[in-house]
Length: 207
Image 1 (cartoon, rainbow, N blue to C red):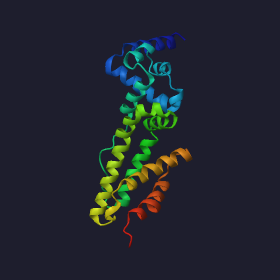
Image 2: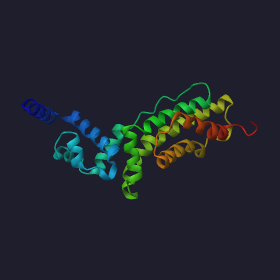
Image 3: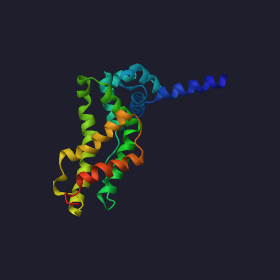
Image 4: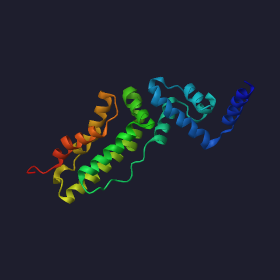
């Protein structure tokens, strides 16, 4: 009993000694965890402080509102989409990209982003539009554009396929399936989406 009390006291002391970037990272991680478990509506500054093992005042000193904290937490937790796959065919490139997007969607940061998208009202959502658009939508669209334009150069893809409606097809379908079905997309689901939707959409009309 004494040992456990000492351990708790040591943990509390160690937490109180955290400063600067270390403490901020702990708070941001706690905010992401709260978003992915209790959602936007269930997240409170008090709950984040408790999860980060710090005081509420330490949170409010850095982020005066829940919106400010969540915006920074989303930026900190967003996945890095940088290397565009090049596996020799547009089908394989798209499939690899979809797997990576799927894994990001169902990561803690992915759950956090979706809780904001689904639960915030229109006024609140505007606060996070730049985070979601610049951190998630634009990188995915950029990678899709590069994959499709590479397919055009290979002769696999029709020349007029590099347009906004085509680029939107995969993110829209994945978000719809995620929201309506509420379960993680299996590899077979992604393969069917590519083979039954994207490949026919991209191929030449005489193919």
